[in-house]
Image (cartoon, rainbow, N blue to C red; front, side, top):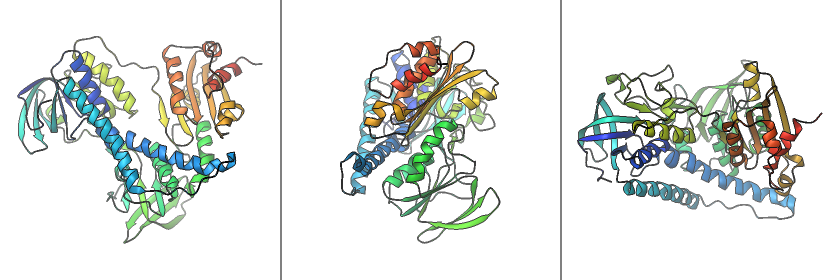
Length: 468
């Protein structure tokens, strides 16, 4: 890699943003023979996912799961003492995971001999970037093609800016500056549930507020019900159809004004508040107004099947290119954009993009949910298999879990797969492959699964479609 303060005069391909989409696009384009310049503020590639998102949160969720399993082991005849949390060692372990992964990406960038600029980029026009390096050097970079991969950031509660002290966003929450005695989580999406689970396991009394009438809006209700039963035991309370009208930081706490669905108002106090109401694309400040790149009403870059914007030589991938805002979707888009930039035939047209909520139990799904299928007025058949009869689930000391299949009633083609239970995030890959291969229920029914495993629930659910 070029030294971080060296701004080349021109680039065949410039990638702006080195998160999962950006570094994957840069690496693939370099493998295909393009001269690549990658621009990002961090010392190494990784982006929000590695530094402040997916990886540190999953590291902490693993820790939370270990604490939970230790507490529940008594039912299996094994007793442990109360876990002692060394917060500094936890922070250092988490940092070690992040450093190892980001350092590996930095080494890969050097191996591919791409130019890595630590800094920020802004379009002066459709073929020129203004670059400001981390050291303050300013210069211009002319380019032939560009891939935008600048990611997203947390949405603040209107009228309130997270201060990193009493009011946190997801980035600050992952720092584990302290474990508050009481924590209010605003938002019942996957970020709020995951981080709320971490803090509950570490000893906080967690309350959660969600303005809609259910957790994880858009997720299959059968799956949510499995998770909700467990969260009711972990969280102090879950308040649905309730909104926060005001946050007032005080010296040692935050005063929170709430209003429920009936219009009844109340005031509560918490040591800290975590705002987790979603994310927005980072498309401001890029100088896109100096190009013909178009944004939609939500601030996403409008792209075609090759991830090209209205400015045909400028691509956009990842969180700035629309929902779902998931790292693995960015990876897939990155390969399409890089290959298109290199002149290869490539198109982003997945049949299914898996979604996973890494709570305990995990929730995972791909393809159509039952609600979405019925909203489209499709004639479907469903199979719902509880895991309480699965041998592997019981040997794990668990009983809760569910596998659900949605198939077309006439053709038996698989339309959707959904799971809730331990390891659902790993198991869902089989469902994604089945959808990509246009599998029918008969295919799953005749696929021999190892015993005893949780994967057998896919086989058993498929068998249910042929009974009666």
